[in-house]
Image 1: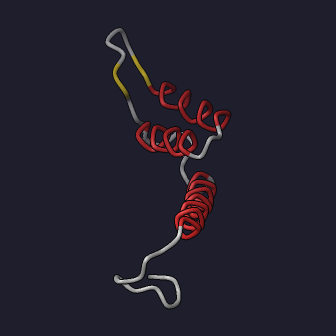
Image 2: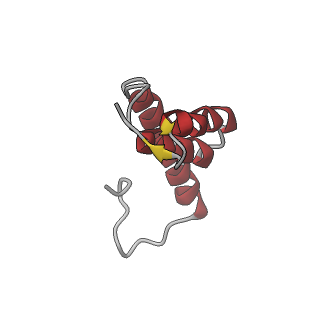
Amino acid sequence: MAASGVTEATEVSFNYYIYLFFYLLQVRLNDLAFYENRTDPSGPAMAHAMFAIGWLETGNKEKAEKSFLKNYANIQGPFKVFHHL
């Protein structure tokens, strides 16, 4: 949805891009916080991998590291395969 009065023919200023980036970053942070609290802590490694990427994209290295390390909690056996219970 475009900002009020903006059409395809409207030339926009750099301020629109700054606002859009800030808005999307806020949406991303809200989504990460919302879903991280609702994801099974012993759930699939792929979920934790996606949280790690998401937190890195938002600049939160501490949360990214925590999620990244959860990826390896389910590695089993001599062949280092993922095992989900």
